[in-house]
Image (cartoon, helix red, strand yellow):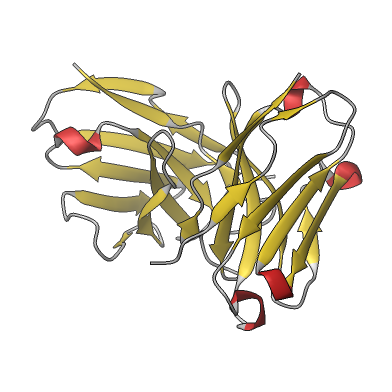
Amino acid sequence: DIQMTQSPSSLSASVGDRVTITCRASQGISNDLAWYQLKPEKAPKRLIYSASTLQSGVPSRFSGSRSGTEFILTISSLQPEDFATYFCLQHNSYPRTFGQGTKVEFK
Amino acid sequence: QVQLQESGPGLVKPSQTLSLTCTVPRGSFSSGRYYWSWVRLHAEKGLEWIGYLDYSGNTYYSPSLKGRLTISQDTSKNLLSLKLRSVSAADTAIYYCARHQKYLSFDYWGQGTLVTVS
């Protein structure tokens, strides 16, 4: 199975801050990575797919990048509605595997 | 916007069978494009992919759950189903259904349903 190591597990930030979250794959997965936002009692929302493609309707402050097996989600200027949990998903092979999640909290 | 909705009992006794359904949009199973996965979120362990059913009715299960799991569809009712046998406290989680295509990521998810085994 491909292991996805996500960091940090949590972070405290303020509105307007730049936030970066990283997922590292245990082996090459090409660009087969997506980022999601999770809020309680809501459906997870895909933000980024194919490592760097912004999902339609998602604000442009969200961006994704890749360097080898390291993937980064960046929120350029954190907004109040962005306080949530974020996780990555690799869809290069089965079983699909996820990062452990990053909870973004208000500082 | 594609809406998926999970439903099922919130509480299951140990050793019994957990049964959930996911309502999908009409005609989804006959589209010839989509796969339907179940995913669960453990409070401590995070997200775990459970298995999928494809548009041909074929299934593929996580090796860790394979012996206890059945995923099926009821096309006439637009329902995706999950049955997990011999549950224990380790199966306590929020269960989600999600749509995807064969090689792609999950594009739509349900809002999840909490199942407690106790």
